[in-house]
Image 1 (tube, rainbow, N blue to C red):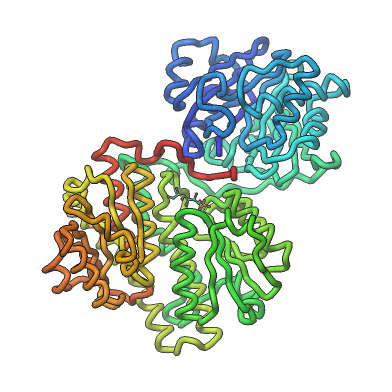
Image 2 (cartoon, helix red, strand yellow):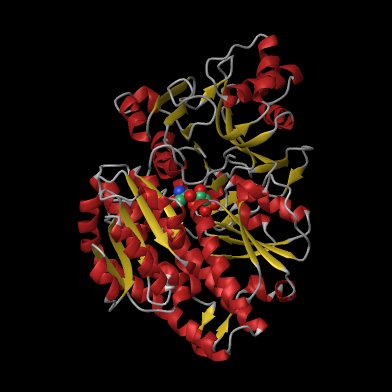
Length: 618
Ligand code: M6R
């Protein structure tokens, strides 16, 4: 949930680390800090706020920036409020060891008390300061090198971590380690330099060679030498697995847009094509998905599919439930990963668990997967980030291929997850014979047209902006939808909440009369999805009920609609498609609306308060 970076080599470390932190700010932006070693001194700068605030402190102070070794951090607070003292890096009592940490040390309180008994004093409220002092204490007790001390200390902690540790007494190396939080090591030419980061984005312009640490592994990086990787539990050595990075610089830049979110909204036509490219061969009437093809018997014999996910990915999972049950007639349950992992669920080897996650690092989803695996279920991952923890932990899976999603509010991740789930539903339906050949082929043809329909929908931007201007000061909003579009209502409400801080709720349209209808008055905007095949008459009745109570109606309808147009205050038309595919279209106006409202309210669209892109803590 925090971002960590590091550099060791011959270049100036400061600009590499600062730029790296800016790219990692999606992971947390409560505070930021950097340590640069100038050959003699550790120069530490840290502050509450963003990396830009940190730069203000360091910019005119060349001493703080000089050096070719350093580590940096951008924080999403867990232990201790965001302030200067709690910001990372943290130093040990002697002042020799410096650490940056992403994760949570769960037994920090016990360790802290033990260390206080041994004469340590603490300045921050963080678990990280405990860890760096524990490493120092082990180093002293065992009279060993930093690497060994880190290894022993980590066997004493419970929780999750990705760390980078530097020792002033041994300034030619950095130690990194991981359990539950990601860490990537970029390898420079001839091992002359190394880059450390929570993901590979901070170093893509410097090297394409990357090694991802596995859980319970640590590595010692030292210029001029191969990376040494060790198993934390028993200190045995592990062969480093260096891969070629496919990420490019323009994928992680704004490319002329004001915000990543709007860039990512506009990337959806391409992202959807990238998701089905090579899998959906519409002209041949085939869907190829290696993760299913190689495990077809398991899928065909599954008694149940359980989807586990969080947030937007959970909403995509709900769309998946409607799709798979409708098309392939397999019972589906959709669970919040955070609930599933702790409620002793009944899982059997005949269950298939589909875990959905953009980042592939969400702690609750990861834990739900491990639980399902321990009970014998087959786990299929739907992830965006290639090589992520969830992608590696699942038995098989399908990447969404949306490209990097940097805005904290998920947009293209959602539509590409739905695309993958549509392909899964269609493929299973074909294999099971629950859709006729002609129904199957019609879906494929219609699916192929979705990207151009999304492109066309993006042209309604001005109209959505106008609606945003009218309703931007609303205090509460309701989003209503039925069937396939009920999850889209939930997602629409989440988008508005997270970036504009306006309270919004999503409901199945018919549920409104069981409570939320009491909220409706002339100040309440209601965003209603009323597509022509989705229980249209019933939704029209719901719209009438709203109208009678003076609510403001903004309806999403199918092109050519007449009835709703006469009742609603505003309508947004979406192009015609199969009802099961409409979530790929109805969600677009909601994304644009949230975006424009947040911009008009002058909110930080890409980095909304209190949030982080990947939630690697419980
Ligand atoms: O990376 P994941 O898909 O596992 O993340 C799950 C949620 O944290 C995420 O979807 C979150 O709800 C987004 N901020 C929503 O826009």
